[in-house]
Length: 265
Image (tube, rainbow, N blue to C red; front, side, top):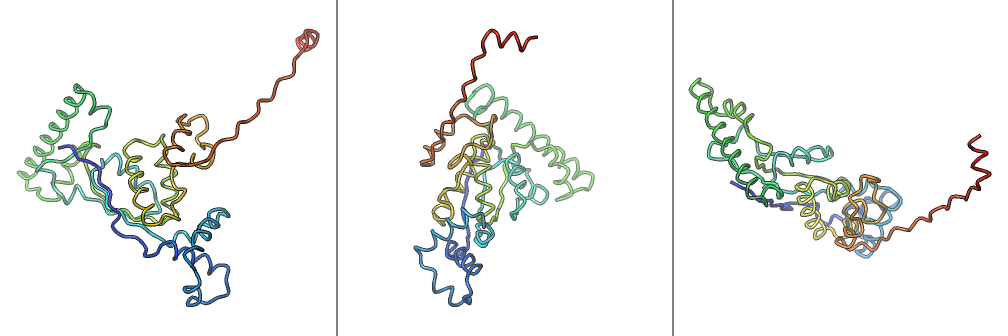
């Protein structure tokens, strides 16, 4: 059965921006902790966070963390997600959770929009389910049951199989994650997930994530020749006022016929 993406922000550091501002001020102030707690006004928090990012002092931003519950993503997507190492993950196990009742799956949009391909895809999902159930049955007959059977039968499950996962990242890692995964060159599924995560944290901590998103929002695209070609469109979607400066082309000096002959000799 086809599954749909759902992202929930289940927990985050209380008063994340105040916490970051407090940590930053501690680095540069002789004050004790109690006096710091009473000195950071709401209006100052924005200035602190902006200054930290500008000067590259990012460690105080790590004091705020955010925990998400995510479902309706494929194993292909979760494999990309867990490559972000500075995070904590708890994923639904295919070893301890049996898929005999039927596994859910994700259909890529380009396949879903094509009737012929969708039928072919869903047929393969049904075949994978039959294979999984057959393997579990035969393993049970051999006396291999429960998780021992599941852990071997799961080898027949496709990358499209749906999974559920809880993720905790600190704010600094999230900023990096959004730069990479909100990019239009990122794979469509993890990009959709990242955009939903960004929407949720912007509500919880608008100052921290004010300029969060793909790397091209406030600077030239770092992808170089591999860029998507839609930077202007992306900046408009995210509401970024950034405009790239046009580089002046250096005119090549004209070479006379006499000079050309000299070079050829």
